[in-house]
Amino acid sequence: MVIETKIGHARIGRGFTAVIFVTILTCSLIYSNLSLNLQQLLSNSNADYTYIANDNANSSNPLPSKPKIAIMSSFVPNGDTNPPPRLEDKYFEHLVNKACYSYIWGYDFIFNTTYGFDETYPKWHWLDFGTWHRVPHLESRIRDYDWILYTDTDFIIKDIMRPLEAFLQEFELYGKTNVQLFVPVDFYKSDIFTFSAFAFMIHNSDFGLSLLKYWDMFARGICEKGNLNETASGYTWVDTDQPGLWYSMQRAYADFYPDRVPEGNYPKCNATTGQLNAIRDANQRWNNNFKKMKLIKGSTGKELAKVPDDQPFIYSSLPDGQRSGLALQLTFGVQPGFVEKNQPGAFALHQKKVDQFPDSVVNELAYCRDNYGCYAHYNELGALKIGCGDKVYL
Image (cartoon, rainbow, N blue to C red; front, side, top):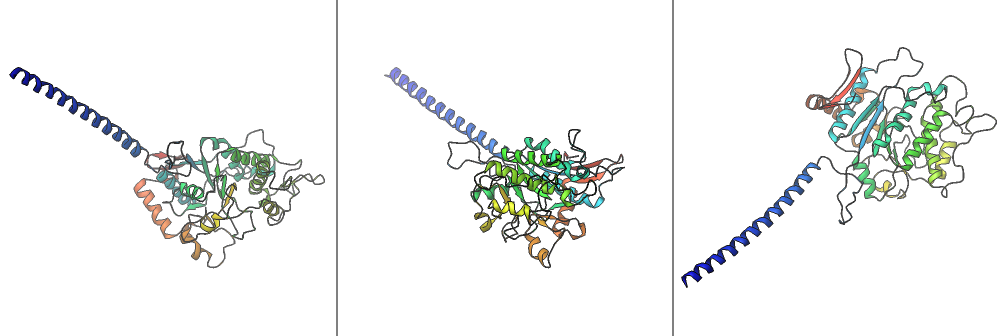
């Protein structure tokens, strides 16, 4: 009996030990899995959100994935300028602002100072103007990113604590699932669709690539004698790349939505003049074509809700007390009281004058320099240098 009892106790001991072992092993596996998930969560927590959903088909509320975004700007002197001028010191503030914003949110900041056109482009006089080079610059990098925000040098981000993903999330929230181009406006009337292209956000998609294709065609000259130029020399706004973007929007829209617009709803070449049959006045022929596309303007709140869900273009709204559009145009046509009413809630500004920056922008520029080491300057060899923290952008 004693032996049996000892044996019985031994059996009980071994069984109890096995239960403990299995329990410990199970807990260890659970802890290991939780630890791994926690590590993955922490490793993805650096501003890891956007409107683009991931492929987690097993979840009814999948976590979003972070798009790859770049901010692009440039300073390319006119081709007939010799020697090429330096960027004025006052624009260093604009560069530090964009570098700091990119550093905070993990975007690439691309600042181009080189020509984008090669020998395949005709020698049209308008291509001597430096801003045209953003077309080949964009074409060369668009496939590296999900989105590129292009801005003129004098574009300043006022709310550096709002990521670009917030715009995309808002579009998604309101069911706007086909956004390809996000643009500012000059006039907030509902029936004016032409705009200054001082900033725009373009999507790397078939539609976005089509926009760049037609814009590049415009750079090369649509007609035998050019586009809208009236002389073989000189330069006016109709020679800029701005009408080229309007042209590309109308051409791409006609390609992707042929049943929504009259056939050929874009300027054509005139057989007599050899140039585009487009009236110089931006509020007439160009705008009439946009009207035929039945676009609705709005980028936030009630205005955004009225935009057709599959409309590819989003036009900026004024600040509504909660959010704003892409930027305020402050370089021309500013009416009395406009700045005081709308600047406080704006995301960004088209503002050349540094002495008119809001106090919040001035203060945060100082913090960017002092706490993140952001800089923009020419070095002793005359090369423009831009950086922030451990990032060297140029």
